[in-house]
Amino acid sequence: MAKISDEALTIKAERMLEAAYVPYSEFPVGAALLTKEGEVYTGCNIENASYPLSICAERTAFFKAVSEGKFEFEKLVVTGGTEGPISPCGACRQVMAEFCDPDMPVILTNTHGHVYETTVAGLLPGAFTNKDMV
Ligand SMILES: O=c1ccn([C@H]2C[C@H](O)[C@@H](CO)O2)c(=O)[nH]1
Ligand SMILES: [Zn+2]
Image 1 (cartoon, rainbow, N blue to C red):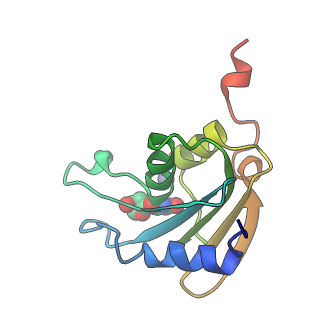
Image 2: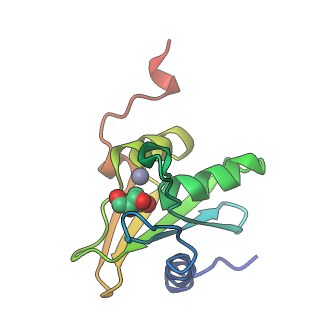
């Protein structure tokens, strides 16, 4: 299967801004997670009146994929209405470290077209993972 371009993956992340359920923050975020098989799992943030129950776009995408038996990931794109490229929260960085190779590319964008390309380890250097439990 031909691999989806970064641009097409970014468009899928941007489309999720419309799906976000954000009555409290009014800050929609979209994510698109590419599997090594070439499938894309998208995610948006979903908030709750009990604020801490809210989930970020990135974890929505990961949990959709993992719940369908997908564990091999190739790339993640995240977008939001930040001034610069969006910056994933610590919880999402830890979830990325759980399921992805440290060198997996993560593309952070915003609605103004700014792009910052990093990696899972770039976002969470020295992450605690199952490899540390010996
Ligand atoms: O990378 C990010 C940053 C923030 N949020 C969400 C969490 C909350 O719903 C809103 C404001 O923090 O944005 C994400 O989904 N992903
Ligand atoms: Zn998060």
